[in-house]
Amino acid sequence: MARDDDRKITITEQGVYDGLLERRDRKRLSHHTTPILIGPTSRQRKTLATTRRVWAVGDTLMKMSKQHYGDVRYWYIIAWYNFKPTDAHFQLGDVVFVPTDLSKILSILRSY
Image 1 (cartoon, rainbow, N blue to C red):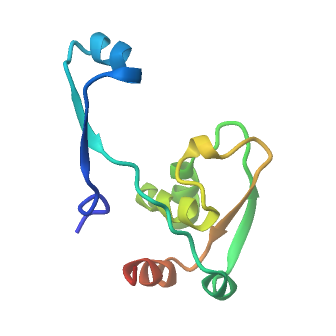
Image 2 (cartoon, rainbow, N blue to C red):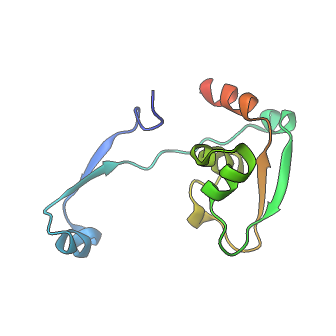
């Protein structure tokens, strides 16, 4: 099961996307809706060891995932733990907590 399997697909036909639709020569776009990000509970946070980093120029969640987990596909774990769903939600100087025990985190996420 992929992460997007349970997300609804929406159709965008007008409004704030008019310019985008025109540039892409499309009448409408279909895309996944934004997921509701449910971060870890305070109890779960207490059981997970983390590494602290400061968000700097050039940082991305995928780069951090590659550095800490050896795979870019786990970027969403860092986003989940920090309650920030995308790179755009981080600002320069933000403290980023990177959970270190990947198998434990995946186990927690499977329980949702």
